Length: 145
Ligand SMILES: [Fe+2]
Image (cartoon, rainbow, N blue to C red):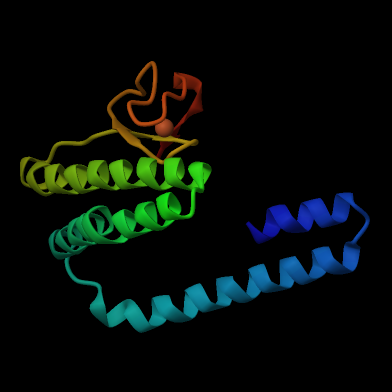
C-alpha cells in the first residue's frame, strides 16, 4: 500500500512525501524480518505448520472477519463490507486447502494453485472460468510456483 501511495505522491510531484511512504514501507519490512526471527522457534514440522495455518484461517473466518463485517455494516461502508465478506469466504477456502494438503501430504499428491488477484481465492489444479467468490474472469488468476 505504501508503495502505491509513494507512486501516487511521485506522480503528483510530492517527491519528499513519496520518500516518506517508501521509508515507512522499508521500516515495515524491517518489522516483518524481526518478527520472523522471533517466530523461528515456533515453526514446527510442515505437518504442524499446516495445522497451525488451518486454525489461523478458521479463526479469521469465524471470529475476525465477522467482527469486521459487523463494523462495516454498522457504519454503512458497502465497499468494505463486500471486501470483508469476500475475505471471510476466501479464508474458509484456505482452511479447506490446508486440511486437504494434510491428507495429500500423506498421499504425496502434488497440486497446482492459482490465486485470484481480486479477492485472494485459491483455486486448485486449474483456474476457474470465473472466481466463485468475486466473479473475476480466468485471466485474473495468477499461477503460484
Ligand atoms: Fe476472486
